[in-house]
Image 1 (cartoon, rainbow, N blue to C red):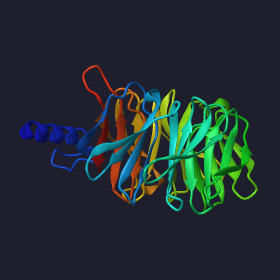
Image 2 (image 1 turned 135 degrees about the horizontal axis):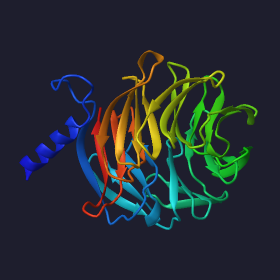
Image 3 (image 1 turned 30 degrees about the horizontal axis):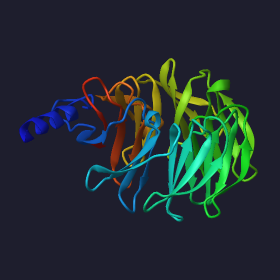
Image 4 (image 1 turned 60 degrees about the vertical axis):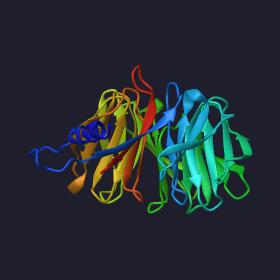
Length: 327
């Protein structure tokens, strides 16, 4: 059994070779798969508690969140009482886990030790992506027909909204420019919000209304987004929204992350692949692709652990699992 597993892991790694000789090191190596148990259907976003070494997985169609011990490589608790959990965020200072429920539009808050419920805030339809802003001491949650909810993590109360013109998808907080960049697929735009005044500054046209995931290439000064139809990676100037790159991508993408150390971008796609994009010298080039599982479109890159996690939904032959890959 050990020999079979070793061969399987080796083969998985060779799927992500760079465009060079066979002797080159793979771009990513599959270290293990952590079983998630009886989890059906779609799995959504992930979050991490670095201090405890725990990863959280939003099991949307199960109405649960799995708590994984990254040292023991196993699920140690399942949080129930949720309704289509989508976005997750862990706030270290208050030791709290935030769960955005798309099914009932609530933001549920749990203690970070035993995961006991401590508060639930009614937001609105389709509560989705969460960003933890430690510097600004706030939690931002995308929801409804056009808003980012602002939550004070100390009082655990909603303190305001940032008004938008349509439902926001992935968004990023960028303190160097004091802006929030977010995807607005309804209007085929990247929306720019001033973090201080909480008002929209710009809506840069993308020419494609399927922009969902987003990351920031800080070194290049680019906002990078993933498009689903057609499947492309687009990079735009952070200053004025001018497009600077357009690269083919795997289909049905929902998460993307910048690896600043290696100047790479990892993109997970529901088509059943993880794409690796080289982002050196302000250029973008597709350099690798690893086969995952159909529907595995959510992921998380944790620079502090130097690991990529992929949420692989159950298939006819394989149960749901968390894939752990090391660049």
